[in-house]
Each structure stands twice: as structure tokens, then as C-alpha cells.
Image (cartoon, rainbow, N blue to C red; front, top):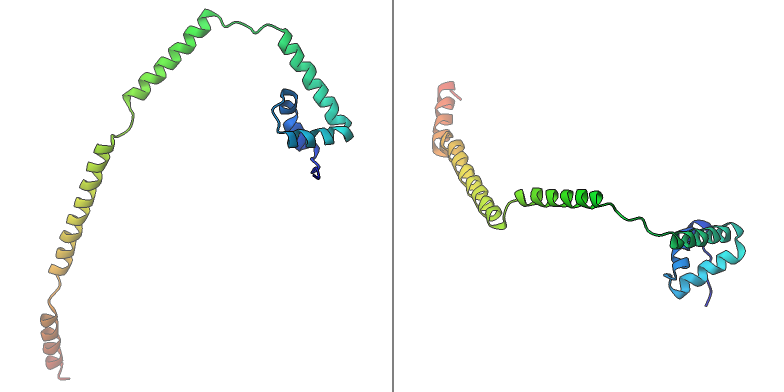
Length: 138
């Protein structure tokens, strides 16, 4: 199987995953192939491993009681705000949609009647045209 060559940017994105053993066998092989020929990326991997070792040796800082209390207060406040407004219910949205459609139909019919009601019928238009022609003597 031919191993595709990765560039430094692609390798740097995968170095932490390589150090953690989180890459697939194929990806790990590609990264190691690049590392064999790239001193800069090898040094970066060594530095990442050294930093990870330092972090493992240092105890994790403990959160103070005040921090935990403030975080939980903020979580509760956000939950209350979310409960106050959760958006319209699906039933209300359906009712609103039906009302809007009904109003739209009613307006269309009312406006259509108003526009058409103000217009003379075709017979009236033809009679008026005939009168004008007769008056002008054409």
C-alpha cells in the first residue's frame, strides 16, 4: 500500500492525536512517515509529549466552593429564563397559520369584489362605446 505524503500543517493537526494513540493505523503510519523526514515536526511532537508529561505530574487544581456555587447559580438562572419563554406551542402555531390563511382568503375575496364591483360590465362598456361613437358621428 502506498502511503500518501502529508505536509507539515496536516501533520501538526494530528500530532496530539498521535501522541494519545487516537489515530487510525493508516493515519498514524502517514504521520510517522512524515516525521521520519521532518525534524521540525519531530521536535514539535517531542515538545507536546514533554508538556503532556508535565501536566500528568501536576495535580489538577480544585475548584473553590465559591466557583461551583457561582456556576450552578448561572445554570439555574439560564434554566429559568429558558422556561419563561420556550416559543409558541405547535398547537398555537397551527391555529395562527389557519387564521392567517382565512384572513388572506377573506381579503382576497373582499378586494376582488371591490375592484370588480366598481367596474362596469362588458355590456355597459359596449353600450357606452356605442353612444360615444354615435355622438362623434363615426
